[in-house]
Image (cartoon, rainbow, N blue to C red):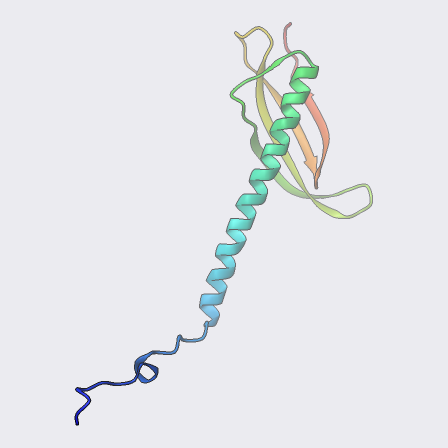
Length: 121
């Protein structure tokens, strides 16, 4: 009796190749990029909420519902630990006609400075 060329599954099934170093490297790069994007978005959302609160307390209106990262650096905090320093800008108005710029400075996970440029009431 012939088996019609039947070969058991175990023999024809290929065993996946082990992950190579270049593959692991690119998986790490992709994972890091996704983590960085997710973390940066969370920080930007945190700063946007802080800008909303600050504008409300100063009786001005935040424009465009947005903050923009305009500076990224490493600086030491008051304890000497190296932290990420970020400067965010946002636009605001008092009258609805003129546009002014505000700044929020973060060091690590904390907002250390918020200011509005001189403006008319």
